[in-house]
Length: 166
Picture (cartoon, helix red, strand yellow):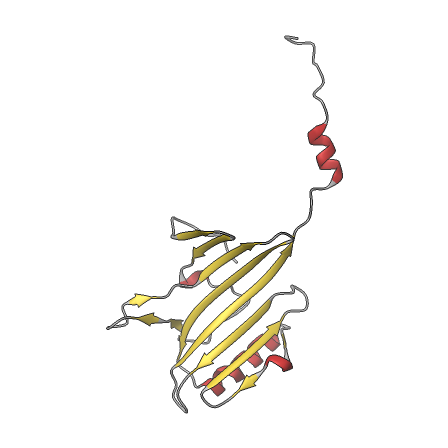
């Protein structure tokens, strides 16, 4: 994820925070096929459904989830082939137990062995139609690490007197 700039909408929730992203802030490690766009709803498709970056604070982890709903100008089969090829080039591994592909829907899950990032795709479209809705979840768990012992000891050490103004 890149650095966020400018003011933006966010929601504070009981277990974390959600930040709304601009389309150009979508994570580069999960590319989108050319001419993909965020899904829009409403009578004239005027309401954009912006991607979200959510941080869930658990007792022993912080879970980072980036999710987005996209419109892709490809069939379900073309999107499956595109992601298997493109993510494969970057070293992602598909989970065969979570790979389900039908003519009008598909579900895929990948993991990157170096970064431990998981990405899941849920696709819905019409048979042989090049207009598919794709929901993407990019998930990374950050295990909680307590402060290093020497840092805690340094913070707890008494201050020495300097002799000035004592």
